[in-house]
Length: 186
Image 1: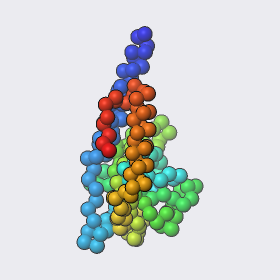
Image 2: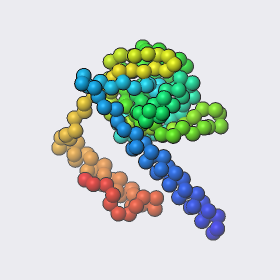
Image 3: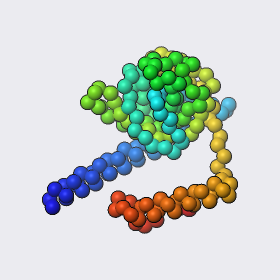
Image 4: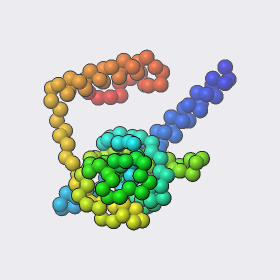
């Protein structure tokens, strides 16, 4: 019985730590576009993954240039631009090795991993289209245009959203890990 209690305490501490790390992401402000609607930010290359707006995900930062880019952004309390590589095998991608659409992201605290790489949580903010690469050394930096996405959902999309929310609430009622009261608004 005591072992079960210890496991629950560890799980509660994990949930608290994850919650605190996620909360850190909200403290990083979005980049403000200039008069031309452009933002400038360092690039964090992404291998075999795509980060979407409002998505929170762990990432691994293994390359020196990526580490320098993240540290530069964090020193200035700025977001980065996540760009997905076309070929994940490239260790030093060039300007033509990325998809043209990326995402502005907040990057949380870097944690050291046993293999020498670093890990962090990222939160996608908004989609961006790369206009130009400003420089490539010591890390990539781009000028990008924010992609305006429609905020209005049609009737079919609203119905699908209500259905998904209803299914999620049913799932939450089956497990003790989620609060029993409704915390999501319709």
